[in-house]
Length: 137
Image 1 (tube, one colour):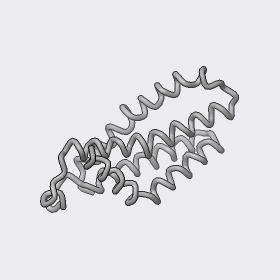
Image 2: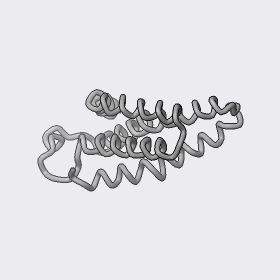
Image 3: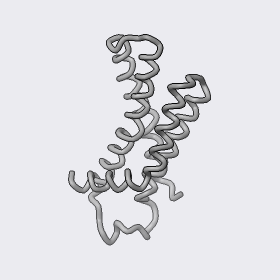
Image 4: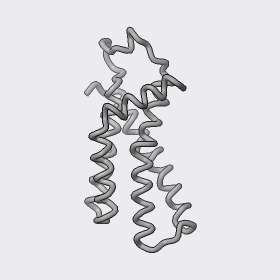
């Protein structure tokens, strides 16, 4: 767990500008709720997921982790934790803000929000992580 938290904090420091951009896109999503803001948010999320996976790339034989090995479950756990904390949570917060702006109550919006976040993580983020893991650039 300690190793996974170390990798996670390294990735957050490394991608702080991209995280700030994703937060900015999520704010634009709340402010201007239309189709192109949805697409822009999805593209920004896919980009940051690809960048975090490529930060510790698996394909090839010249990675630093061959000499300083990470446990594979620590590496996978850190990447999935990054996707959840830095991609899914901002998107969920933006969706919750849209619910509050439109006047929906939290009790009415919460089941849909949880289902939406589960779908974003399982159907949207995990395939992007898998695709980025098997590519080299």
